[in-house]
Length: 514
Image 1: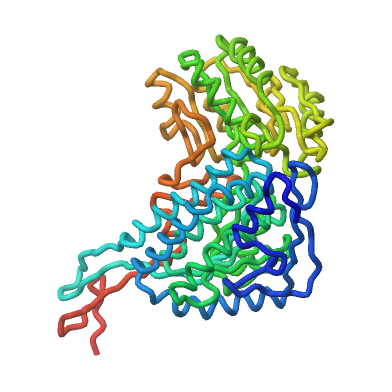
Image 2 (image 1 turned 60 degrees about the vertical axis):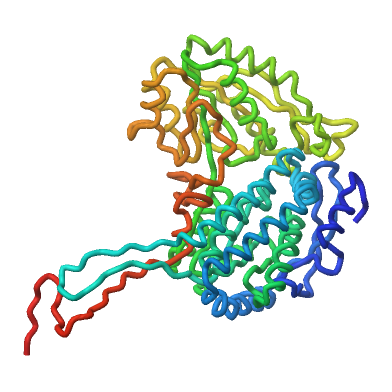
């Protein structure tokens, strides 16, 4: 590990050393005997460090340790579990700058976005602390005299977490913070494209669990490729698998988990649109569309892919966006003067190029051309120019999610047509409308409006807060993570009936006398 951009100093302060770059049950780092693979930065294309892959024996050790840990952890009172999560949040505050830098350098998002991702982790810890005293059930009146009914919630067991490269730490924290206060233990498979961020998080939380005398296995980390995901998905000892990634991956996970009648929480692809009406605050609309389309180099599941623009303001929006795009500065994401960093790897660049060729072939009109950048500062070959095309919603390429900064502009005449275009894709994650007209806003939010899990008015499609449940419909998978009552996904519901009378009446007035 060299110290370019100060990254090795940050790794050292995060506790990452060459002898613990692999899988872990907590403070116990496991040697699988497998080969090491390189975690490369898209910033300069060079290796950051070598990380060891797990094997089936490592997997078994992790699952067995997690099973034993669950037997103790589930009996710790929920407020005490919340206290441990509170301390984890405080520990994250102390390393925010270093962890944000690692996230930025390993994944390629801007340093400000890296810091924002760590802040999401801190926020969900705060949310989970309060939740640890609010895992409420219900009481119900029984139809039978001398009986009392109520509901309570119990932890599930092992929660398997499969996360994607674009949010290498935040989405894990959404799951773990809630799962831990609910009494579950977690096994995390981070993206093999950003394993060091996962290793850093494991170091942070393992120290806190050890401080409180908690067993190994409450928080486990397993490094590997899709084969690890397959093991988690098929393992009946893992009652819930939370998977974030592509729709293709989610369908495989959902099928495998469903076949064993387990639970899956799926956060999959998005094809998000902003409707810009003739009544929009145009300055606000342009700003919302700009960050939504180019933030994280278009590699958010909530990135804005489509702008659905009223025909009367279409030319103005296109002109102003083209002007804004011309001012974007593309380069090293650790340099805060840059707006856009690199794509994650060369495969992503190829998908970007293929999408541009496809939209042109289908008749798309170039507004801002795209290209792969080269030369000084772009040696990794992962930097691309954000592109804009006028297109039609029915184009095949528009119907699919491309994880890159390509924005499609689509005209509409009526608000009903705009909503139909917005809904006219297989995905259903995030959506937005820019308008100062109350009727348009309410139509968009109504039952006949947006069919997405997230629907915003006068803000963009990305940048969700942890207080609300995050997730989407249709091919986005239907899962919900983070805030609201998403905690219920990590627990099992139990209905209890207590008879405190001297009789044994049956429900529904059934008689069964002998």
